[in-house]
Amino acid sequence: GQMKAIWNEYSSLFINGIFSTLFISIISTLIGFLIGLVVAVIRKIQVDRNKNIFGYILHKIINFILVCYIEVFRGTPMMVQAILIFYGAKQFLSIDMSTMLAAFIIVSINTGAYLSEVVRGGINSVDEGQFEACKALGMTHSQTMFNVVIPQTIKSILPAIANEFVVNIKDTSVLNVISVTELFFVSKSIAGSTYQIFQTYLITAIIYFILTFITTRIILLVEKKLNNKEFVLGSVTGGVNA
Image 1 (cartoon, rainbow, N blue to C red):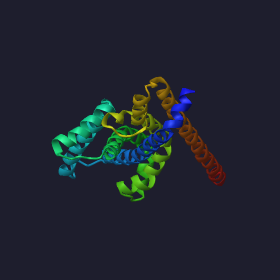
Image 2: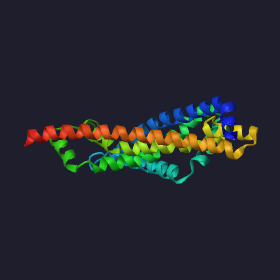
Image 3: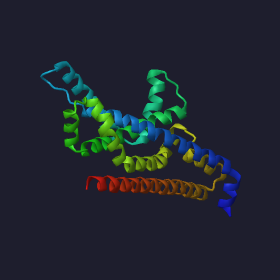
Image 4: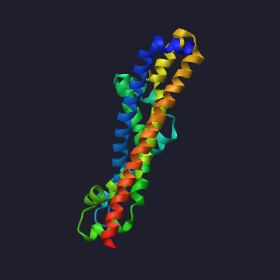
């Protein structure tokens, strides 16, 4: 009864929180994926030391910076990152960004660090023979990457990207420390004004569960569709080759 009363009174706040959480998660996962892709591709570039010593040294430096970025963001909690980035920008750079902008930046950078390793694994799983074949066809490194390797990589890491999206739905809750009005922040305010702490957070837990459950199911359906398509294409081409 109490939960129903809380929901009836505060449903619009909860719904706003849900929209914020989903909005931040979707956009930041996409931006994070692009960051991860760029980082992984840069790290995969091979510069010949003998032909271009300056390029070689520059690549080594950039590589070192990227490794530091990945390690730092994977090795520290997002809550701490949120506080340091949001208040650090204010204090040292006099950048007074909106909490929503800060949310996008923090979750995107964090996601980028995780997904860059996923993308790197995906690139490395593409058979070396394909790199050689592209070279033999006279394709440049970037042509090989964007036309041959990356499309295959994206396909193979789709489940990992989807998983990261589900993680982000839950992890955006830490953004309440910089007052982003996502679901957790809204719940905190409601719990504070009703004093029904258990009931409020039980509603919140149920909402998070529903969000992640639905998302996971949608992802599974999409994966199934993709795999079926692949199977049909495979059997067609297999038939031709045979």
